[in-house]
Image 1 (cartoon, rainbow, N blue to C red):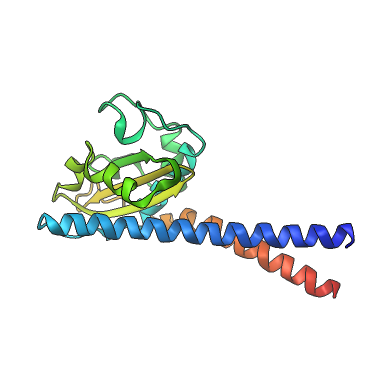
Image 2 (image 1 turned 120 degrees about the vertical axis):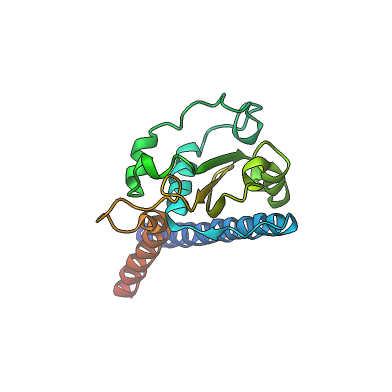
Length: 199
């Protein structure tokens, strides 16, 4: 097999793996939201609807945390108020076309779980300090994203200070949440076109 053929096969494999990896992560995130909604229903609370801007912000924050190790002082294990601010928070908001004024009543819940085992991830939200937010009827929307060992849930309210509405004229905040799968799909398509042109 020539080195060009090997390179093409490698690029195809990377494209396919990254495309399906993003889809698998999305499935796990959707399942976590369903599980959180089942938990809330058991408490006679309304279900959380998916909020695209909360999804975008959760995705940006999860990307920021990716690669950070899990410790006894990160995520849901942290002593409330001890983690400090999220690095580059204003930049993350701007990527989702959000202003800080629409996040004041929202809640950001990061958790670090090695391997993101679904039952342990759910427990990190329902049996930790985060259950205070999940048990709160003020929250009506949610976004979920995971990267590496980190999963982030962003809860939104119906108030102007927590609904995570985009800045006027800026478009949808969901654009950032779909960049990775779209980029993977485009890369796969480009490799496909290249391979078919070589045949």
